[in-house]
Length: 363
Ligand SMILES: *[C@@H]1O[C@H](CO)[C@@H](O)[C@H](O)[C@H]1NC(C)=O
Ligand SMILES: *[C@@H]1O[C@H](CO)[C@@H](O)[C@H](O)[C@H]1NC(C)=O
Ligand SMILES: *[C@@H]1O[C@H](CO)[C@@H](O)[C@H](O)[C@H]1NC(C)=O
Image 1 (tube, helix red, strand yellow):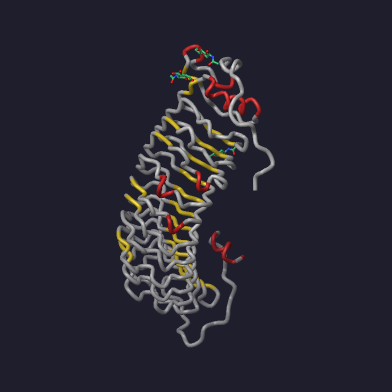
Image 2: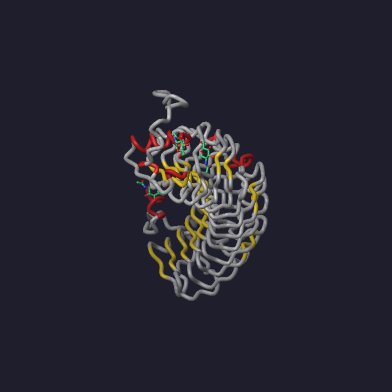
């Protein structure tokens, strides 16, 4: 595992293992090689075809070559690959069995290509794959079961594609997925059941999409989400119990830049550990009763028309006792207009009501 984390930094020279016997030992032309061909580096050397490398090669870096496609069987002799880098290769599609034989592959980098189509069976044999990077492509649709060989998938990056919807079955088999990044797509709908196969997600990024209704049904099986980003989606309201199934784990929630007008009173029911909440650039006038401020250390509230009446008194009380100095300005009532919430004199007569702060029972 130590080497695995160095690889993430791109600097790991994999520990030299015993050389595989009986294969041609030659560095592909234009490339340079290290450690008995264990690393084959062909970064931006004008390759037109994928070079054949032997079973001895663990890392193959092909980024920034105009490859266009991956012929079937391209990697059939490269059974030892652990890390394959194909960013910026102008790939347009991933054909069926494109990676056949890569049963040891852990890292697959396909970011910043022109991929618009991933054929059924494209990821066959990738049972060890743990990190898959597909961001910056043109993927509009993910076929049912497309990731199903990847029983060890941990991180899936799909930011900046053209995804429009998520359907049930998309993530079948990827039961260990922990980080799912889909920012900057065109998602309008996450169908009920579409996330049921990845109930262990810890990080879910959905910011910068076109989701106008909070996907309660799709999210309802998620149990351990720690970080959820929904900013820059045109969502006007957050319904009751939106985060309930993972509320004990959620530490970061981004709901900024959404045109958000209102939380239902019970929107934050079950949310007990939140540290970071971002609500800036919305149309919020008040915050719901169910929001507990006790754990918050980073709250952003700017550019909202806050209504400085007793409904906001819990916020003001938190501000008075916190080191956090969020920028929040009253827009109403008229006597308080343009006053910072923390300076408004309108809260002094508010009675403390609502829940007492519970102590000592968090797990
Ligand atoms: C608060 O969260 C924002 C957004 O994640 C981050 O940029 C900022 O550094 C955080 N501030 C503190 C004081 O942690
Ligand atoms: C502000 O809140 C008060 C009561 O809490 C309500 O009567 C009033 O209509 C609200 N103002 C606006 C602008 O929503
Ligand atoms: C706040 O201001 C409004 C309008 O100026 C007023 O009606 C209200 O009684 C004030 N006090 C509280 C606690 O809301």
